[in-house]
Image (cartoon, rainbow, N blue to C red; front, side, top):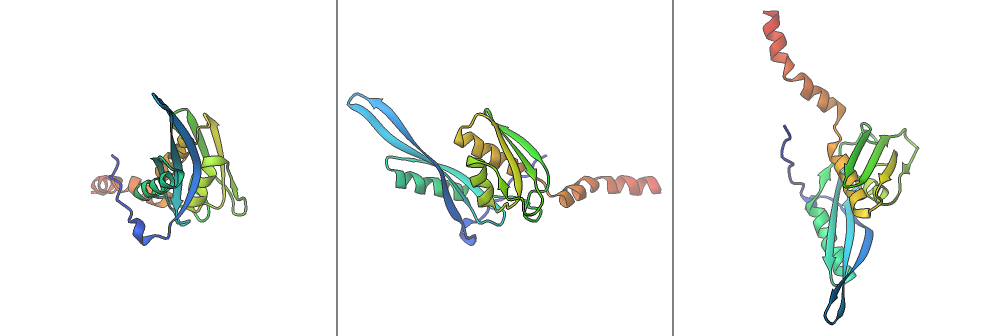
Length: 174
């Protein structure tokens, strides 16, 4: 059973925003086209905290600031193993698939586009990543965030798996 995610206070962290993509959206009205903008923003402290947000407004700066505020609300904590991730993971969001593989120290961030921006904001320094399927910036970034939320620390996972077995073994020995 999944535990509810605890809120991370963004005021305590030194967060840096990074703009991934700005999209111009036109709505056709009676008097002509009405232009608006949507901005995809990632924020992170480089030490395992990362968030993703989408802001929409009539001007680009307002859309970017709204996206940054949304990203600070959606912060997650990522378990890191040194400068990489603890294990390989593959996730899908929509038609976008993202594969993340841990890499040895000194490899660097081998990723492109939205995946690179999210991983660098998170603080991952060595990783091999591949984006498959649809290349939509939003779906690729969300698939990367989904992969990072599903990462588990191997030691904690091992302890969690062993915990229910302890009473059964004690009862068997009596």
